[in-house]
Each structure stands twice: as structure tokens, then as C-alpha cells.
Amino acid sequence: MSTPTFDYIAESTRNEIPIDSWAVVAEVYRAYDHEGMMFLDLMDATPQCFAIFFAATVRALKAAESRNPNFPKTIWEELCEKMEEDPRHVA
Image (cartoon, rainbow, N blue to C red; front, side, top):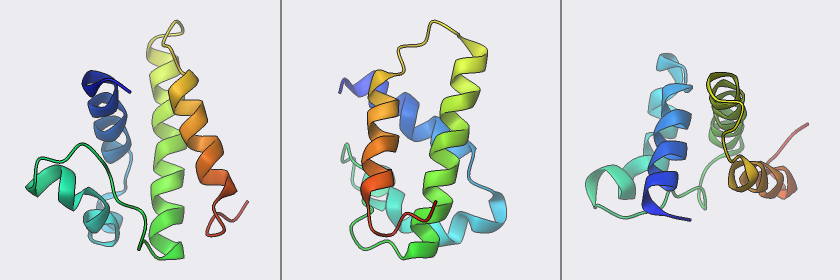
């Protein structure tokens, strides 16, 4: 995934996280925000944090699609599919 694509997905998802949930998911963005790393870390995320982040990711994908129907969404859809396979995901 290219840096601009990653940044777009990461920031679009961040924009969809409810303000009252930000403290729950702040750790996911720690390496990206504070260490300049190009990843978000869900390895130790609690099921609650994972659920908030997953919901925000799906909302961000839908918002991106509505703004630009030609948006190349394949990578984003693959991300959502992988997250759906995670045992912390509750349908």
C-alpha cells in the first residue's frame, strides 16, 4: 500500500471515530502519530477498541465511496475483510 493511500485510509478512519471513543482507540494510532511509523497497531486492542475501530473503518469506506464513486476501494475492502476474520470482530 502506498503512503498516500495508507494516510488517506488512516485519517479517514480517524475522522469517523466518535470523540467520546477516542481515548479507547488512541493506542491504535500511537506508532503512527508519535513515532512516525506507517502502521496502525490493533494487536493488543481490546474487543471494544477493535469494534469501535472496525465500525469507523466501514463508515470511512462508505463516506469515501459517496464522495468519489471511482475511488479505488479494493485495498480498503480487503482491510475490512481481514478485520472481519479477526476473532474480536462481532457481526
